[in-house]
Length: 201
Length: 430
Image (tube, rainbow over all chains, first blue to last red; front, side, top):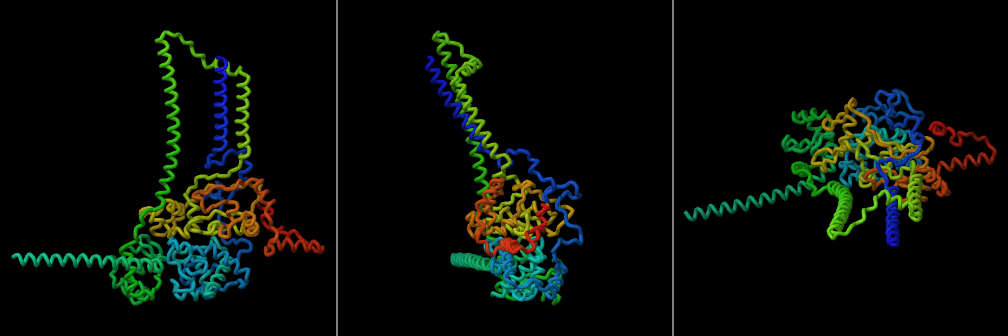
């Protein structure tokens, strides 16, 4: 009789041990991907100052990221955008704006990088209007830099630096303004590279 | 009489055959035209027009009903000439569309314009099935199957318990009928007490407890404050898989701060609008704008019909931050993405086609929903800084500066903190 109870207890032991280990393994492995998990001293991680993406009660519109006051400029920021977003502004920019940067390998290399990031998805790495988004038909009607005529008159290959700059700044037709992504100086580097692409054709 | 009926029958037959043949002929001609027209339409018109949505120019479905073909044949190749010549229909159209001049297409001859018009009339050929639906279904079935398995297990346990009870009861009844007295069951409390008097059991119980708590504690402590795998629900179901993977848009197109500042920066909604002013995924939602793209519009106060923004209706998009470094840890994106790009690529074994961002952020181009790939712990940073080889960075402007400073120190020339980057704003203000 006693032997059988012991045998039964043994079974129970094994059973309990198995359960305990399975339980521990499951609970330590499973984790809710929607939560950050266990945290200690969270306040050490939370910013003391406001992050730009945080709500902020101190401002009327509730945002931390405020626009700089009117007529202020960051240090080292050169403004070229004196031409309005109109056909007249475009024509005027085309006549009077010149690329202030010297054509050299450094500027062209940076222009190429910027072009590949910001322009090539639609315009293609060669500027032929056959970017990946055009090939998979997400975007259509992207002009080539060296064929056909511009929607605002003139040949595409005859576009002046100022016109290209104006287009990057304000966009045209389906192309949006890229002013918030590319700084004025960087825009000139892109213009330089685009004109280089036109020359290669 | 019989002759007449025969003749009528013949006439009827020939008419029928003729009409059938002509219908087939016309439809095949139309199909060819439309196919040709589709290519032309995509190449020439889509930068300003769409079939069923107002863009820069008006929506074009039904344009043949609004204007005569004769007018369209003149308008499309040279709209401005027609306006200048004082054609009343042309002037009216020009004024109605905000006096935006339509590009002239002298290269489009009459046949080509007719092809385009045929395509517009026929519309986009319907795709057989969209992938989106299938994917969504798959997800729901996998969720369901897990729930199903859990339910089956629970039901099985319940049945086992009930069956066990019932068999015990039956056994007892049979024994009672046979007139055999049964010992009363030992009460549970006494049983447990008895068990705890067994030294072997107690030892085993304690061992289990130690294993259990130990593994809990070990895992818990290692994972405290480590957010690997964190994948919060975002206000817009933005798919990095679609944008960075299928569409192959460079990371920096949207996160344009990554190569010039400390922050990679979350794009503001105007960056979304660079594409989503035109891209509305209507083909996947039965001609409606995608509900997720509509969220961009409503946050901006943008009306896709009039293409006007109403700033009074705009509200910020509250994305949930995934990667969160505490303030006491300084990390600079541009230092890693620009200065250290080559070294990081080599250390992490990235393919030339992969952006350097993958080194820490993982295969973002396969993430339907973004999640934190790396632990972002101090150990993780330190290990990488210990192992990454930065020798052979000859063309690197950053290291050139360091070498220049060293040369000056060697020669005993004057050297200031400014030369060592001491004027960087972020050295103090971070």
